[in-house]
Image: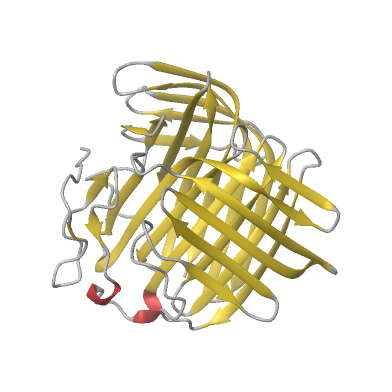
Length: 340
């Protein structure tokens, strides 16, 4: 069953539970942090951007996870292949980052002596600016990237409850297929992004999570025969009986899928993966290039992540039956286990 939300309403009811679990094409449920009934240290809010081109890219995160703030950047080189990551952790922000209640307006700015990171929202665009000193040795990471997002473009929005905790929920938007313009410099290296060949995705998340979760997420954006095409695939946590996160995008229009399964080799994340859907509309092979692996273990808190970048080949079928064939289509797929 795929329940589509088609009207605006408060995300949470007076008891702090989801009003209307399901999926939408836009941010119709209205998030209000003050409506949450869980303790502040359980609230998790983040904005994550990943901008990719054929041979590399960058990802950037500003997250307020209640008891811990997390600001991070990663630079990808798919030719070598390698990734270089840096992060900053702050204790107990508890909402002090003031992340906006919607992705449609509002800016996010974090600055200290070492790092400046800004996510700025304009009409039909997003601007990302950052200056991360001593990112690798004495080299700073600097950049400015503009992402184009027409107001008419649809996105993947989902409101997911957790069956074991009535005050836990995940409200999420994925914005795919945003053409990117700008550049990133790290030491003597410069990555330039041009809108014909460079595309960004936004992972916008707000919610209250239960302690132990594993999720699977995949995303890709680019052009197929001159058309903007992308997809979001995900599962693994919460009660998805009302809706899943699986969606295709063609020229700004969303096409809903049912359930997608990741088939990951048991002995290596760098061996080829496959993906299949129960409705027969998503059938992909995936050739990994780079595994961005991290395992942070702080006794009670742990995050074990494999974010694997690679190329998708296969077919996807739109709502009207049109078949999209892709080959060596750049994207990523991940498995993440969190105790948080």
